[in-house]
Length: 260
Image 1 (spheres, rainbow, N blue to C red):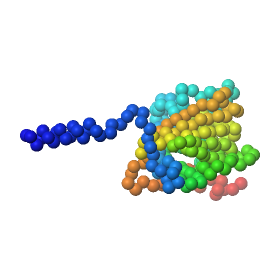
Image 2 (cartoon, rainbow, N blue to C red):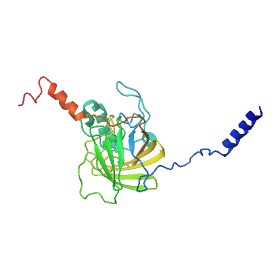
Image 3 (spheres, rainbow, N blue to C red):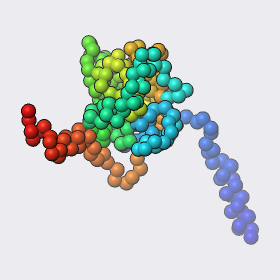
Image 4 (cartoon, rainbow, N blue to C red):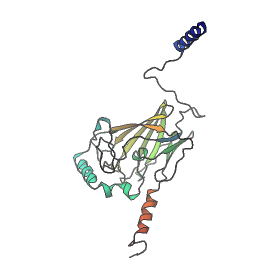
């Protein structure tokens, strides 16, 4: 009995001096050899933003979901809002994803596929399972190339603000949407991303969208990214363009077999 009492007192003493998590405590992430926060790993979202970045109910083939847009409002200009509604009505064929195109930034970040982050002192590379996408974020202080350039994933230049990787992205084409619901942009799109470690297996992903041809003001999205925990996790293959090409070849009246 005496030994049990002493053991209980020791346990109480240990608990009384053990560190207690504090609400709002800032996470200190592990570091790469050059001292930067280590964001490396395979990550994925757990949301329905790829279908619709705003609140939406369930439909055939579309899971219900809560939006990722701050305030759930996208500030379209009147003509652009009419275009968005037209996109929605024709989404089954008009969505660029149905044509096998790269999903664009930021949509490729919240497609329902994993992606891998790899870091070096001069750049951060993101490898996407979706459509074999590869994106380099240059963190060596270099500037965006001059002129307007039409790129699917834009041109990404990053810098560190404390433990947050801030990425400025310009030079987009106008061939991608933000989701399957028809939310779209022009070639004047300007994206600013923020990647902040909030725990050993979580990143906070924040995006500011600016496009003076489409929206009346900048607006924001945010969501957590989750590190995949499977023992042998790796990127696999999803090549939507190849699948579409295969379907075309398999059509009996395919123009590949019956050129005009």
